[in-house]
Image (tube, rainbow, N blue to C red):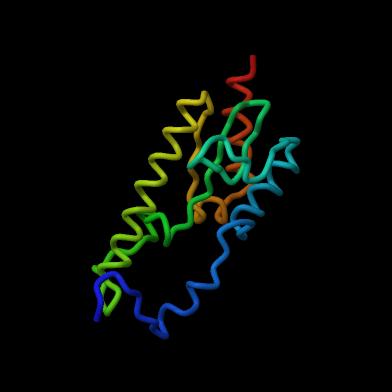
Length: 143
């Protein structure tokens, strides 16, 4: 087997169909923010390598909704070592995702945006409460 080549497995087929935009947690948070009077833009590219899921331009808040599996949630992320023919590739992929998250957060912060990274599990647990926190953070920055 060649190094770096993915091997198709029945366990991984469902992952190829996962959405990267307009996910259920994103939509739940957007709905809650909108319901509370917040206005936002979707997937606005702030710079190369930095496209938050939501931005609240009035408050200069950039929000990234991180999926528990893909971004390594401490509570719901993978806790056992990878196994199978793609083990190293999965480990490397998720390490790259975390590194990309750190870079995009730094880019947004350097551009003067307040960065909020929220876990999908937190959004799904209480989207209205999270929306209140987001808008509260913005109002504390409002001139």
